[in-house]
Amino acid sequence: MALSDIARKVESTANAYSLKRSARKGWRPSVTGYAGYGNEEFVHVLGRVLMHDPAAEERDTWAQRGYRQFFTIQVTHHEVEVTVGGKTVAGATNDNGYIDVLVHDHGLEPGWHGVTIRAKGAAEASAEVLIVDKDTTFGVVSDIDDTIMVTWLPRAMIAAWNSWVKRTNTRKPVEGMASFYREISQQHPEAPFIYLSTGAWNTYDTLVNFMAENGFPRGPLLLTDWGPTPTGLFRNGLEHKRVQLRNLFIAFRKLRWLLIGDDGQHDPLTYADAAAEHPNHVAAVAIRNLTPQEQLLSHGSLAPLVKVNEQSSFNIPLIQGTDGNALARAYRTLPSS
Image 1 (spheres, rainbow, N blue to C red):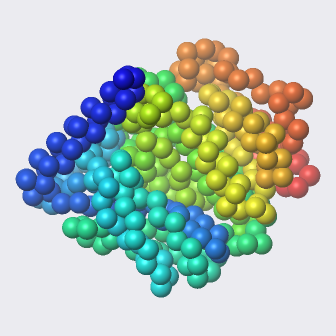
Image 2: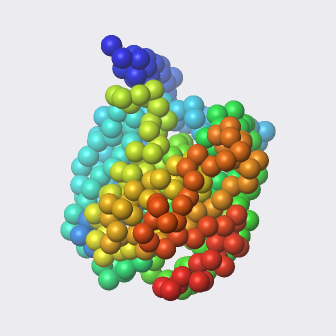
Image 3: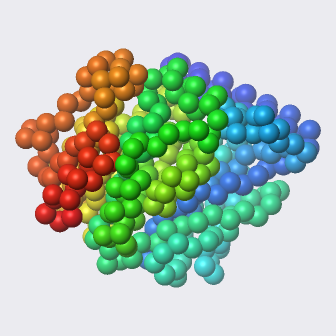
């Protein structure tokens, strides 16, 4: 048996034990809705079901400590149903308690809409979905960590401090990125913003609050789960981004995307592959260049792991800059901007 299989078995057994123990103590399932996305034909309704102690009292000293987000008991293979417009569809949570219910023929107009999620034994919850107009031709996919928010996520100890210990309302935005995104949104008011990250779903509320407080355009988040998989002890962040990009290309066939990331890890490689495989769906790539200090904290080297070479890596427009202000100036020089 592979080490990843053992880890998954241990995780599953521990969660099953915690699930039964919490139920005996009076805990109940609780639904959290995430922002979903879709077109005029179908929509993904996203969420998660976790166990919740109804008698729990928040203590202000710890209420915003990031580590609390990671200590959860997921409710697996649990019956759920979602209502979108006038249509209700049944589904179930997966092995980690996540909900991803696909609803066809929902009848919603383009824009943001509220949907309802119900789970057996839990209070009804709401979520939002973004329906993209069929005639929209431009959108933005943005990384989060070290692209719009200073985290140095790939470096384990710093990630643990930023995500688990540091108060969730003290994270710093990358200078100029919010104003850069607002400029794009003003030029393309119908453009969807999708935030694609290898960060954990457990940090969803923190990230949504961070983006709202710092003036980033609202958009669905596509995050991942840090647990073991059939092929490894941890999720493959590179593959997560590739799969989600392909899903977006398939869902929105008319859209061409501005892909925004940083050179602290593998965004240049991921975006170069996407542009090569799907040239009709990538309008341009924007890469934030980390400083040598940020590179060192990110992955232990002063230089980027993947050097961005416009001539050899990209056959589409590529812009680079150290922050949002530099990227905005470069963006204004693009022919289609």
